[in-house]
Amino acid sequence: MIPYIKINQLHMEELPGSEINLTGSKGDIIGITGLNGSGKTTFAGYLAGIRRPSEIGRMIISGLDPFSVLDQDKLRRMCGVVYQDPRTAVVFEQVGRDLVFGPENQGVEKKKILKRAKFYSKRHSLGKKTGRNYNMLSGSEQQRAAISAILMMHSDILVMDEPFSMQGSEDAHRYMNMVINSARKRNQTVFVFSKQKEILELADKVYEMRDGSLVEIDIEGMEYRSRYSTSKDELVIERYINGGDRKDGNGISLHNVYFGYGKKSIIRDMSVRFEAGSAYRIRGAAGCGKTTLLQLIAGLINPDEGEVFNGENKKKSYVFQYPEDGFVESAVIDDVMFGPMSEGFPKSEARSMAESVLSFVGVREELWGRSPLDLSIGEQRLVSIAGALALSPDFILMDEPYAGLDVNSCKHIENIINGLCAEGKCIITVEG
Image 1 (cartoon, rainbow, N blue to C red):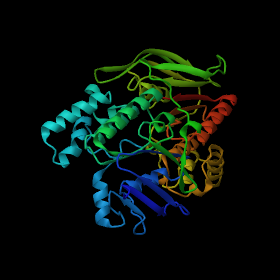
Image 2 (cartoon, rainbow, N blue to C red; image 1 turned 30 degrees about the vertical axis):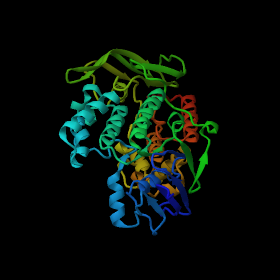
Image 3 (cartoon, helix red, strand yellow; image 1 turned 120 degrees about the vertical axis):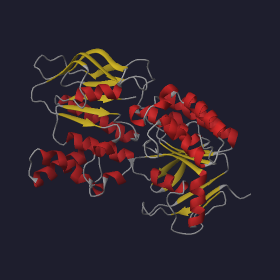
Image 4 (cartoon, rainbow, N blue to C red; image 1 turned 90 degrees about the vertical axis):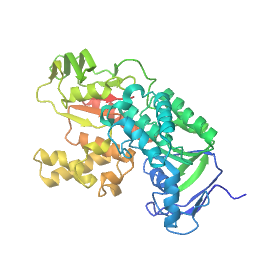
């Protein structure tokens, strides 16, 4: 019997020395994990027909060889792709309109489309949010909306790249289980790329991308831990590194702060103080206002009522939930130099500062000349953290700093946070 998927010595041009071998049957649920920069997203592009093999016969999926441009186009049409950044495939700003776009293009009957839209929006806890624009949703809600839009199309193959990285561990397991149950009924083949153990343990087989090859692994023996707590019904602030309650004016205080979007109140009567030398986590359910609170602390938005008090002459830096939102230059080294250059440092000194902080956070030197947009999302996140640290700010605010990072990078960021707090810095993170 000819395998539904047969990949034989696939050399990915973007990853010199790589050689991918994989066979699978129709309906298989295949998990793929690996360290940041190991080539997972690149391989996902080949599976989805986005990238084309350089030789004939290296990939056969459902009888199609994507070396042929015609077959590549057919493969692309039969694949549903969930990208790391859920905004990548958005066509219409309104969530509900975007949900129906795919099956409309397929010519699906309107009645069936509306039935599917109601089913998937309810299943993925979107509720009445289908009437909103994507930019009004939280990151976790954007992920679920993007997944719903792909599932609406009933594709033969699903390629999902870190689909639930912004969900709590229990939610990630629950939503992935729903995807798999649906795939079993339709005999869909699913490739899920993830570092979350609660996702990988649901797959039929799990492979690790290692040194340009796929190695089958036993997920129970691997150290992949979730970075997120169980979702809560309300916004919670937790101080997990205690630098003491200082009275020297070095903190940031919110006094009776209110904020909302339109008629919807998000932050209500918030009074809290963030102290120098301490680290805080902001947690809670999707849409409860975590990112909104972080932006209020950063001064990116102003409260409707109440006040935000900052320590005198204190610098703040902000790491966005989606790293590319903060990139301003076309090369990694230039992007990290941007802050020091803007502050008037000479170019040579700014470069030295950028090189030092890039090395400190663990961005490999061979990546410094590349565009940050060409990096994996884990590498992008490290670059964005480096940019935030370049000017040695007093307060570092990070929105989902661990999303998309492998376990070694997570530990490294934890060590950095500990070290920064020891220097008297204040770290505030949003973590699911």
